[in-house]
Length: 402
Image 1 (cartoon, rainbow, N blue to C red):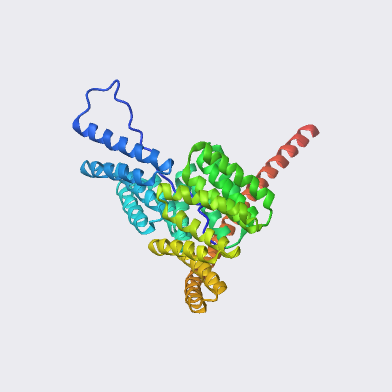
Image 2: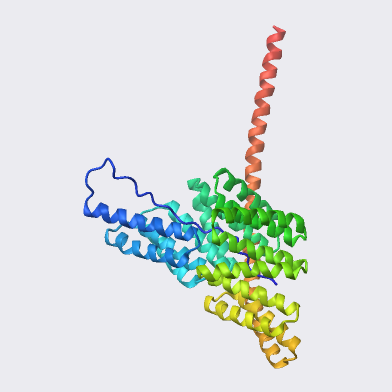
């Protein structure tokens, strides 16, 4: 089964509320801002813990306070938090709406760091929707801003996300190159949450290469870090990957419990994307062991959620599962109906894929140009250095002749 792996980095900001210990009594305005900052922090904490519904409540409570006092930076951060909570729940339409509002708030105060992070987040959202052309377009915009700012955290996130684009078009070599770069950046920043995510990404590449032992080692490291951090989002991502790993090796008795663990967490935190993915993954495995009625039930549930989300890849996977199950049952009418649906979703994805590959070729071409320019500059510097060394040697020789 092909599905979009949740390996992209979405960024949330953290607001420092400061301290009032040695300050004069705060005005009503300051008190309101401190309240909004506190609410935002609570939302950020809940988001990290995977409690998306609670995070959303705190972010939404902070929003009108920032609006009332025209605090554009707080407004941008709060809207980004709301969008991220929606994204983690799989509600990408609302996520995009709020990311766009957040970007507008940051642009209003010329906050380039905020704009670059939101461009990255919009790119990640389009990636999850299966629109890799749009995703790459936003990543390129983000990189343009980031390179001017030297923002290491956002550069690391976007580097990771570009790696994800390469992986999904099956360019595993470049995918690994970008994931390794991102891993080194995250490590330098001591960002454990991102390290857990990138280890999952590297493990997934090894899985595609059928290097299953290496894949398991990386995925297991990722799960250990995510569990230690109590980060449910990262746990769900790697549990899906581990389910895929054992499914590929036909160890179905080991694969299903990983999907079930992911499903339990996804239902707990109301992450619709992972509920849908888990259901569809379980459905595929049940089809393989001939538990066809259970498979149909699981995949129908997954399809219903995928349709709510508008997630093309998940809709295609669910329809493929239902086609195979009904065909095995001998229900050719239903099998044909879902076969036609799966082909329609596949065609939509394929047209996006062709556009994505064209954009990706342009991206690679630009990278090649950048590499050539860099190499040329390095060559000129090297030649100048050699010339200086030659002159020094010549001077030494001349002095010895006197």
